[in-house]
Amino acid sequence: MSIQTSLQKIRGLWVERISRELASGEGVRAGFAEQLERFFDLLEQTIVTGDTAWLDSILYDWGHAPTETNLEEADYYVSFVINRMIALGIETAREKLKQKEALELIRVVIPILTHSLSVVIRYEMETRVAHISTELGKTQEKLQQLDQNKSKFISVAAHELKTPLTLIEGYSSMMTDLIKGAEQNQMKSYLDGVSTGILRLRQIIDDMIDVSLIDNHLLTLNNQPIFINSLLSLLQNEFRKTAINRKQNLIIKEFEGSNLMIYGDSNRLYQALHNVLANAIKFTPDNGTITIDGRLLPGFVEVTFTDTGIGISAENQGLIFDKFGQLGRTDLHSSGKTKFKGGGPGLGLSISKGIIEAHGGTIWVESEGYDEVKLPGSTFHILLPSRTEPTDPVMTKFFGQYQAETSKETESSGKENPSTDNSPT
Image (cartoon, rainbow, N blue to C red):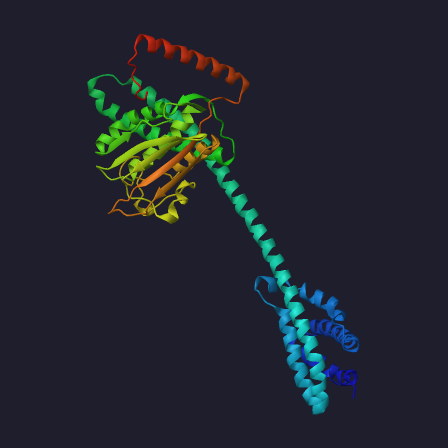
């Protein structure tokens, strides 16, 4: 008996068993049986010609036709079907054929079915990878939309809060002006408290607006000639009282590049440096030291803020520059701006990063780790481009005149007083 004859002898029972076991319902079973009949027709052609390419078309259709449920549940249904076809084929051949005929049929058919199984597995994997890629793309789009919605919410919420805040601030100021006489000192102290709260709320709202501008690439810079040491002197003056209250030692060193005239937005750069210093003060215990230093590098001025604080763990050194990047337990959150481990909305370092990057610079932190006992400290590095000329033509002309006038004043001052003080301004 030929292989084809043996296959025809068991084909009907083989198809019936596969259909009955793997397809539920008469309608589904009929369609499934029709597909099986097509498969067996191609299987016969493969046996006759010895070319497995006859099965490629149906295997491709099967391998690329899993349902959405199969894909989501990682169910390799077609692979399972062919595995059962192999098992039921062996079982049916043993029942319907003589031993020799059964062995000969199995010898010829099983390698073909095994090859079909490997092909289907490859097709199923391709389909699954494509499905996962599509789902990842959808998820990424949703995350991007969510991030955009968050940025829009911050922007809208900040502006919505700013309007009533302006009214409260105005009326509070007018009430303070109307208060006269020593007997009304208590009322004035209440209004001073209200004003302090308004100022704090305004700072939070301004931070929210800045974050929204940075996220939407709308932060504009009012570039002008500035000196780094001028900004550092302003910082020292502002935080002098805080350092005294916290018994901290704030050291600002003069370094090469600190007296270099560069080009940038002085208000925004001061805001960025202010946030970094405030962060260093908050996470340095009383009696600690914060040192501001730097150096001149090719094309950049580096400013460093080194503290003797509690440090930052390696896994959190990138997170602190994210929006709302809060470290520690939120249930212990405190709104203190300068008290030890005082909290805040978690926007300061994110805003600093956005401002510095808008200037073409970068910021990062180094720390040996977090330890409230050993106090390993942290060092924040800020790189700012040492641009000495503006890109705007009008400002270029102004900047040139400014440099010329400054140079003349320096020469004149040097002639009048040869022992000029070179300390930071």
